[in-house]
Image (cartoon, rainbow, N blue to C red; front, side, top):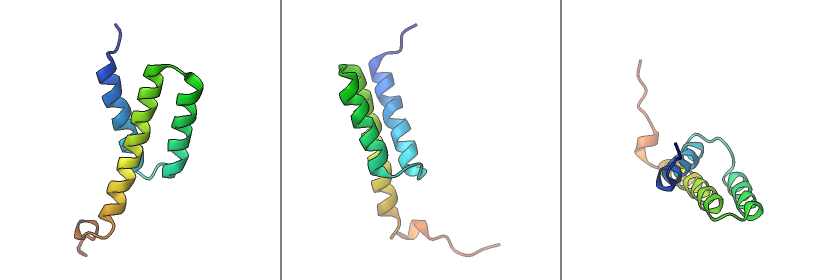
Length: 79
């Protein structure tokens, strides 16, 4: 059974988003690595998937940076 490209695209974006939200790596580190893989592979599908990982990772970091100043990031003290 062969995985379809839209499913792979969604999973790649989700994997990048997960790493961005979990503070897995620095944003430029993973994005740079994804772009290097895309340039070395020179295949359209690989380029698309690594781009999705990079965009997902960047989206996760942007969401986390935006949340830092919001009241959702500060929980009240409790038991």
